[in-house]
Length: 339
Image (cartoon, rainbow, N blue to C red; front, side, top):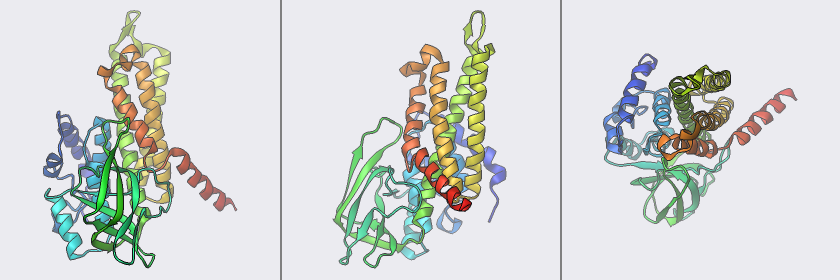
């Protein structure tokens, strides 16, 4: 496999430039090649890895961009890559990479860490039943992928046919679109065996951690820039000790979160993902709040845009497991090791 690490800086720079545009629609993401980054070249993708997807996720957070990348590319394509190759799966993957269709994985955003139970079930007659809430980008998808238990108890991935209902959920963060997906006897267009539901949960949590890292870095950069420009008592506020210490604390939080996220991207185990998700998402909320405070009165205005980052950070903290839940997972693991 090709090592893409050497082009990460270039990928990050290109992504930052593209996301600076006023509107970034799905077709633009397809043409940029981001949708199929970790899809094999034989199916039209770039043949890269999740490490490259993580770079894009971080830049999306840094720009607080409104896209369907999380649900459509990170989770939807991730689910298709998690099942075995077949003619139907390969055909759908190719259609998504080429931009002819959009998929979304109906994995609940309020699920707990660990080995989650699939939210849907396949009855003996082949009909699918179940419900998933806070599903990213389901409303814009042409095809929905449902993690389910079949009648024999095996974990499968179902491409839903007719009879599935999608209703949007309103959340405070206006940069994301979440929905409730309900299957009440819907048809199953295709069914593939899914061996590791936990891997999809880790991928979802890690993508949100990368996004939060981008949010935290953007807020640190904006605050340092503002502190060097804003004058008070005839000198920049960044020269005041209290402001210096606050910015230094923000930098430490970002640096620690970056180390944990990088470790999880390189080795996505339950433990590394738990550390990355709990650290990065909580740091993003704290840093965005501190950025609002250090910007003074202007930081609380709608025009400053800081509120956008704070609301995105707050949603990221809750999606796919809270920091408290992940720390409980870590604590249980360490207790078992001591015993």
